[in-house]
Length: 362
Image (cartoon, rainbow, N blue to C red; front, side, top):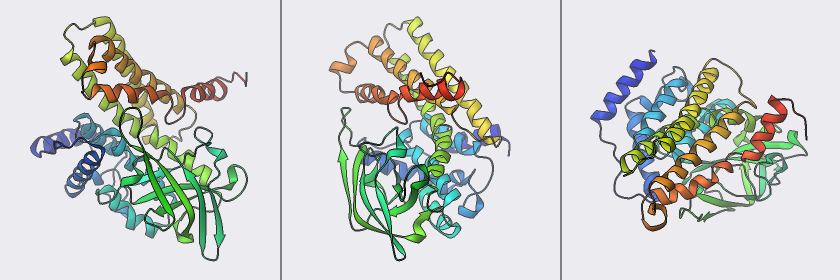
């Protein structure tokens, strides 16, 4: 399929079908809008391109999915965070779940009938994922899970969770499951952050029974699953967030009464550098390359560009962040975490230094 023709046809379809968000801009409203957009795209076929036929897709390269996400998020029809969960979790299910389970569940995610979340981080295990302690113990034909997860995005709206647990020591002792969040013993507590949104949650597992048929892969495959998930998080998901940042850059230009061309130029350069890098990553993934430590460069560039953009907002729209109740304020506050979420900037630079540049441990 011709990629540019696909984009042109999608743009024409979006122009003809009004998916503009309604007046409810709360997190719940955003999730409802996401479901609405997914359903419309799925019913029209757009949300099925780039996904395997075995899970209800229409086939074609994964680049088609990137284009759909770029157009949807760039038009502000859906927020990049909630939208990205499909791109992270559906490939994981396809690669690791039993074929029958993936065929049954993935279409529910693609079509917006369900939201899912990712249960990886813990209070003492964020960037150091291998130290997690939530434990799964075998019991007859089931596994019993006990522990706590934190920073689980959108868990309060989710039907299922891709959960990483410990079943033995070390990296080889991590095992993943897909868990129904209405299972007895699961408690979800939203956390309100400084930008005023309860996007993140604590999730407690107290003697939660998970059927062995819900294991993703085999016992001990959890670390490999987590590493395989990372390329999707740092390719297509980043591409969507870049589209969002470009849309906010355009809004800044429109609102600035006295634009500083130097500041705007530096911001555009940061965004364009990020986009060029991300485009190369997309094409490497589409070409069958196995992505690894080099995606830390993408992560550093994303955090740098995002914070530079909102620093420029602060400088060119004086008083807006402090005095006006607009979208700029929570977005600026959220951007402060860009060097933390998804792997801290310090750790990403250490990975670049040690694994890409061979600079050693000191």
